[in-house]
Length: 380
Image 1 (cartoon, rainbow, N blue to C red):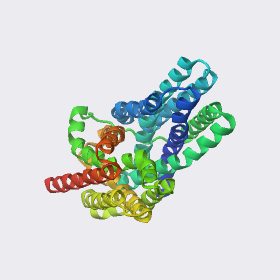
Image 2 (cartoon, helix red, strand yellow; image 1 turned 90 degrees about the vertical axis):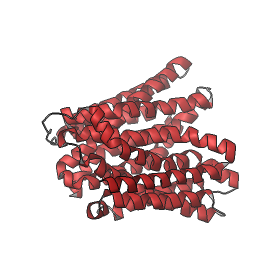
Image 3 (tube, one colour; image 1 turned 60 degrees about the horizontal axis):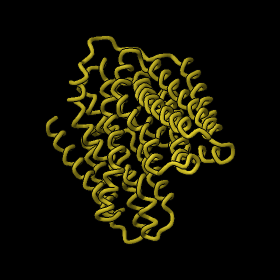
Image 4 (cartoon, one colour; image 1 turned 135 degrees about the vertical axis):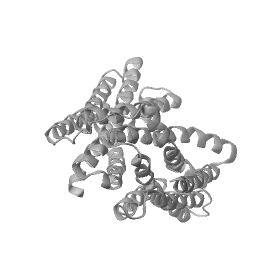
């Protein structure tokens, strides 16, 4: 079973390895190398999220109409273009407008590529093992995603420090083209033919589940953006370790509990996950010592781990097979939107009430998601 899933979700690993590499180096490159403000650096990074949110539904429709294989291939070509634009930015870093414009265009292409690769790879994996194993495929895709982000960040930093941005761009081009060559050699998943459900109806069906996902995603957004500053404000060391603890517990939960959704159903697992996440975020925000904060990060990662596949199974369950790619794309867009909004929102909370309030508020969002999930489970 797993051996049939891994070749498909491996393309997600390649895509998110690229994302992790660039995410680790671009803010400092724009601010320190190009001499632009931190606001501009933030906008360059955010351009990818905007493109991802806007392109997710289209990527889902592409998967339904063209098949997962072609969608993944188009996404990998977009990643290749992003790497080429990084090369152009490195070549033109003496011309501020050229360097900045190339980076922004590359981020937009990478955002579109992420949508196509992630959605296509997930549906490709489902096509290889059957819809009965949707939760397992989504779980493995998440493991590939977070594992690649964790590996990509240090790799990008090493390449950029030793050989500059051009080496990162060249690596991205080579990895994306090699992945596309592998995709060409794999057998495609069958395209399910039939009348497609109108997208507005798909969006209406998945929105309640997507809202729950977005509320749960606030915790990760706040941790990613502010845990380093929070630790510094408390005089603690080891902020990077807190992020590692979060990631290890996230991946560990998916490896250890991959079958619980199939056994107990999506809603019960999602409800339990939100409860654990909310407790973890509250503990992180109110931690009296660094060890308690580590425990809070661990609980948050463990709790959020199964939210996406658990609610995802329920979101696509009532959508016809020929429209499930579009449903998955629309559902996934909610977590992208959550990550885009949570940073500025948490920043406003921190400005008014301090760092602990941001984490406690994120825990409150998890509690709201728990209530929504219980309501959805009663509704059926």
